[in-house]
Length: 90
Image (cartoon, rainbow, N blue to C red; front, side, top):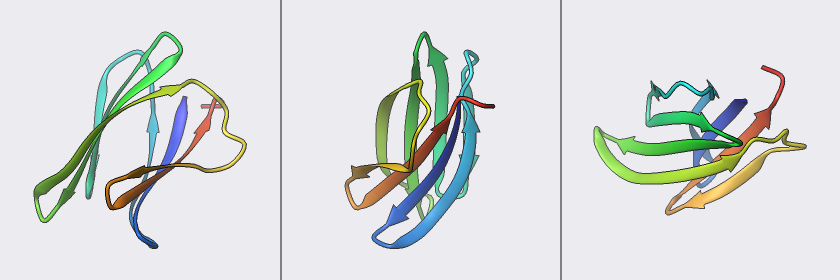
């Protein structure tokens, strides 16, 4: 599953990235975020860490079902918003 990700603080886009979740555990670090991810059965297990000035601000574990998003989806995480769009066509 391919996931487009945007991390926002209020209306400001802090980071945008794209990850390909497979059965092999991977870590993608890109600017303000670190994403550890792995596909386990029909669930993408994602550990998100958000950093500001080198300090970890939040850590969140997400279990995202494998699916095709019709539009952008979002999750509120403290003062951040994680927007994502899933695609099965990788």
